[in-house]
Length: 424
Image (cartoon, rainbow, N blue to C red; front, top):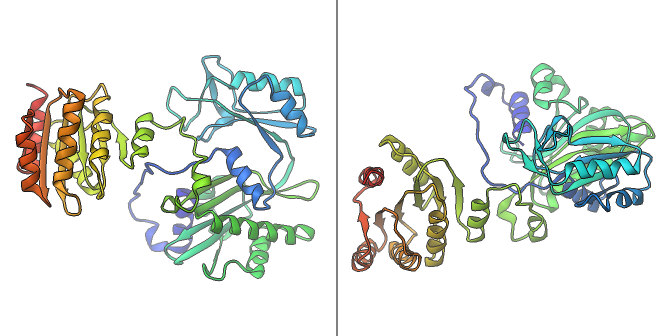
């Protein structure tokens, strides 16, 4: 998504090109494995390679045989790029993407991938364990194009971005050959017209009998984009084959997580095996958690306050162990689960609770804290700063609990006390 947005910025917003580069890291988002994206695309009439998924080597050759293909591409399924040049550990097998015409070779390749960690330029040094391998029909690509549909603020709605230069870094294309990037805004109320689809197909270089087919595929991609509440559908390459087919060979789909209530079946497909298990656990209770490397755990309400809390901990010489935002509608149960999550982290040596109650009831936080401490036999230093709605009652609850809770008057005071508690 970031790459396509930078392309739009380069083409549509020349005044921004020379501004300082700002990098935003996305923390949590739904990411589908390649085979899942292709399954979803096929449901919308989009041409993708025939494929199947193996989770054991034993049945992989029979699965591949059912595809009835002349040649197969065997691809490790992890949420990282650069798989083809990756290396597996501990067996040292090279390449997470292989081509073969031999069914027995399919089983051998799958066996070397499954259960091993694949290390690529986009993974950590330990890599990601491969639990599934996609086996797909190998098709010869005669020409590659690029196509993306995304929501864009400048246009106030969806826009299609395309280029006849596919199969390569689209940012590089935009920088060196901006004339090769085409944009087509779509009216979000009326949707894409056939004329717009045909125009984009022409811009992408599809000719004669493939022109109409490419336009139909673009319409199908837009229908997918709209119906699944996507924020972006990026296809690279959007290609044509030697036998005259238009195929979406690879796709990345980003979803609006505010639409979970409408897209339950899609979000149920989420593969959490590559995520931090603490983040997965926190999400079960609608807690926003990000693990860090420090030893002072933070429980706050609001992302801005969380950032400020982590900053001031560092200012006074401490290191935050996490970002944990309990949100504005927090319950005692959520506070309990938050404390459970924090205390189960062996690197945490102290906890700082920083609540500024607007819509949050401080008494709810106080009850959650006391219940958690009593039921868990809590023994870590605990500094609590509460301010806002029902704070007098909250402070009474904490005081009468007789728990060894250190109260703080403000954020400065709280951070200093939390850092100091590590040396006591």
